[in-house]
Length: 168
Image 1 (cartoon, rainbow, N blue to C red):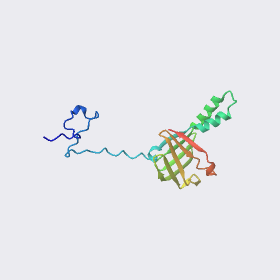
Image 2: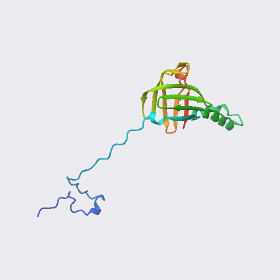
Image 3: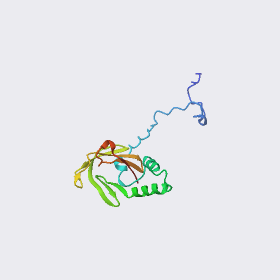
Image 4: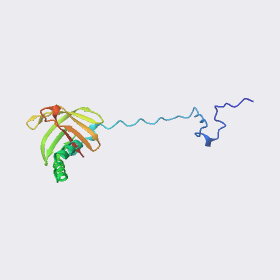
């Protein structure tokens, strides 16, 4: 009689499989279906559509803390600044962008998407923004699902342009 193969699992009780005992081989006629690939990450253009309200980020809050450091009503003044910012909104549609203050459009232009990544959307202004040309390029960065940042596209010096923070 032939000696049993030490690598064979035929003599191992089913309860012991996975408990340090060798696994039973999968019969050749059994098909193993691989897991489906994960869906591609959503593009920024899908995530940024909608209406966003300006908000204080941590740098702006720190600057206000410093500005009002000696003021007894510091917290009230910082809250007043935050409330003023909420009156500024950015509305992004599939092909247009509108920046409004106190409900009035300050900047409106059509755009074409130049680059669409999971965390950033780069757009090129198309046509006019009121009486002046629309901005050549604007990058909208997705900080998280509820926060975006945008550089001031109307700044004279792009290197010194302020970064605006908006929340849904």
